[in-house]
Image 1 (cartoon, protein in one colour):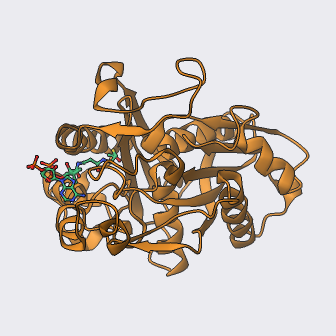
Image 2 (image 1 turned 45 degrees about the vertical axis):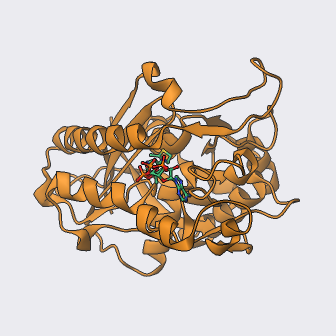
Length: 325
Ligand code: ACO
């Protein structure tokens, strides 16, 4: 049987037009632009308009990814969409995207792994593609975190933003004499003992409300750096690679200090880091595909480059994907 690789054919992203700078928060919280920039590296983030939903952002990102890949609605038979802020409790936001884009075949579903959702989505979609269950997928991260922020909590509401990113991932026969391409390895993990460090205090079954994000920032910081470094090395090892093979690190964009600490823990120079956190804040599941798409639109990645993406979020759930571009 022909072995299949799951290869990235195109990328796309979308940010709401409403750009919010740090001085916005000074008007109703005891905070400052200086504090936010020095502790997080964030200067601005985008918030969705009142009538703009997660699926609206996802549809725009997917349309751009399909155009970039040269794929039409008839070419897509899988959508895996990572979000913690779906339009509705059900149906899955992925099916709203499927309908809006005129995709009439295959299957579409959502993944909930909070900030690590896109890594879980990539790992899941590549399994479907490599086993032949689907041929070409949209893998999407889309969020409107502004809807679950507590505007009275200065330690969390300044961190997050809204947005969406997507990739077209296709099954391609593995070349005999060339190295494997696309998703080379994934390491995904979760540990429910850490729920209290980062969670939303509402939900359909528990409270009948949407709830607000709550976080113990210092502890999340500590776990993030150590778990992401271990996961990156595990995924590279699975791919038969080491950190010296890595060309680009495109991590979940939580906080510039976490990103710098991770690079240093991995022994990699910051020149290899793709960082968008300064202008987007933390867009949870959307942050990796947003950063991948923005970098790709600037032709940052060359064919054959090794790109690693890692993320951690509520649960905790965390993981890493290793790709050959
Ligand atoms: N403006 C001014 N002061 C603030 C603000 C603010 N926006 N937020 C907190 N403070 C105050 C605190 O109240 C505290 O005051 P106190 O000393 O009088 O009690 C002081 O600043 C220091 O607070 P710390 O929590 O110790 O600040 P720290 O340097 O740890 O920075 C931060 C806080 C930015 C949240 C940091 O812990 C962090 O980045 N954690 C990682 C969490 C993260 O990025 N989570 C995102 C979701 S998970 C993920 O995506 C990986």
